[in-house]
Amino acid sequence: MRNEALIVIDVQNDFCPGGTLAVPDGDGIVPGVNAMMAEYPVVVLTQDWHPANHSSFASQHPGSQLFEITDMPYGSQVLWPDHCIQGTYGAEFHSGLEAARADLIIRKGFNPGIDSYSAFFENDRSTPTGLEGYLRTRGIDSLILVGLATDFCVSYSAVDAAGLGFTVRVNPDLCRAIDLDGSLAAARKSMASAGVEVG
Ligand code: VGL
Ligand code: ZN
Image (cartoon, rainbow, N blue to C red):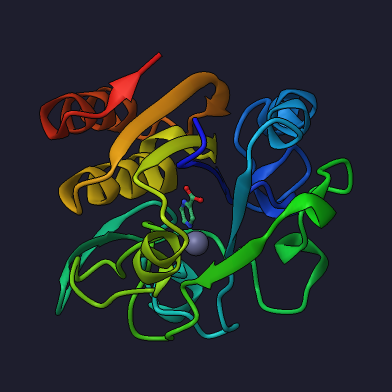
């Protein structure tokens, strides 16, 4: 437990009801996440943090549809509604989240040409965010992940963390999913094969 960090993924207004990429009941996890934050020696929050012209936004691809999948140089990419734009209300943490508890806030998705679901690597799965070094230099070898959304940023973060050699558990009660075309089932499968404990 002492070498374990709690990683809270993207509990931001745009992923909560009323937000531009609202996850059903996204705000329902806030009380439980606050309670967990009080119990862990190391707490990291992630913050999706896009420039207004981010290439993951359908608005940047004339003629495309929301949630369409497109080919990018680094692989396939879902085209999202504009969300979590740097400095806007939608990018702020949910007001009920006890964000002051965080030791570190790591921002991701700030490079206009590439998305970053994972807290560890951009979507090319190789450009680091720096979080691995932070955790290792603090002596952390085990992670528990909660947050939004289960099937995108939580699962990508969990799979990457397992690949880096961390022991990883996802608490599904404190996650909520977008569930786009089977994405939740796919995420469960990839977490299981990466050795992520879900429960
Ligand atoms: C997320 C889609 C786009 C997430 C972030 O936090 O799961 N999903 N950007
Ligand atoms: Zn995003």
